[in-house]
Length: 437
Image (tube, rainbow, N blue to C red; front, side):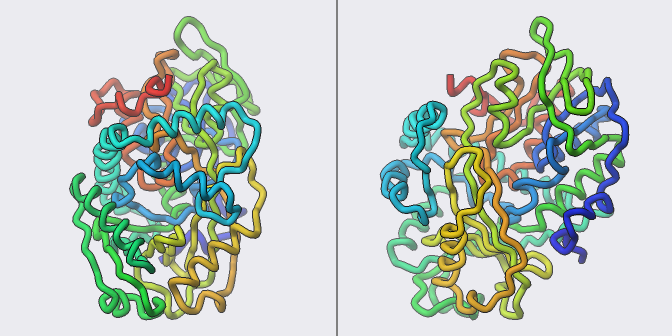
């Protein structure tokens, strides 16, 4: 099976035929060519919408290229978990910690942190848990259908995800989380040390245990995004990379013109799916979107003979391990450092060392690529999804944090339902931008 990770980035055109001339009057203009924008384009194209997708970079690049490739209904716990504030304050002092907030004078960050603290209560957490859980399970079902479309080659495997715990304390925390996600319909299976050792022979001795979530899956993320773009293109959608939205014209409550670096576009509807860049783009429309960029890293290696047969989540290290075709990818860290794409070598080293505390043989792997990207985080850990209250023909689909790949299909379907005048499958009130007013 071909893995897009085997392809040079410059060969994306072999996967996707980018159009030459932009259609000026599409039914829907999608701004953002990552997993959210591409899934929205596909779902819209199945409803016979004339769709144009633009991206300031490359289609399927950014976080849609280098993430862990995990489809995780098990990640139903929102980012704002009760008690996380205390951990965050301690981790802030450690530049190698899994969750690092770079101290800086930034009013938007300060406002976001206040909203984050307000969301990290038991009441808010309990309200958010089923919302996120239902979205993730619905998206997982769509993956079963979309990855079987003709021509889709994205190394999709539904082998589940195994959470590993080095310490008894970590395992106890894992059991508590498992009890919570069981409330939204998942069936975690607890494994003792011997069972883990039998399944993952290279796991280090002394492991406390594991919890397996059979509902989870994994794939090659870029291959999926470009594959879905080709599906949408086959339905008539058009994609334009290196095309930046630089301004808007409005009349009344509608966006009439989107000014881009390749000319003006006059869409009937606009979908804003620009990830961590959403606050800057939305500012042109006088919208305040509370999203902070959270930098994450991945390390891609040539896959060793002893590679685990399924993805792992190394809990205390906060590192994901994903077998991905002929490669093995480690991913982790959450660094609130603004729109900073520099590489912090200490944090990269911490990911590899963290993996080495769980698995033998990590020091001898052949490193192929170090990647970093910006994940868009809202204060409560739920995405922003719905029609804007300020502009009647604007749909915002952003803020998916570390689970954008997991939520891509269901987000795309909801966007298409809204744009087509259908009743959405979900109550979108908990996802409205206005909840942060």
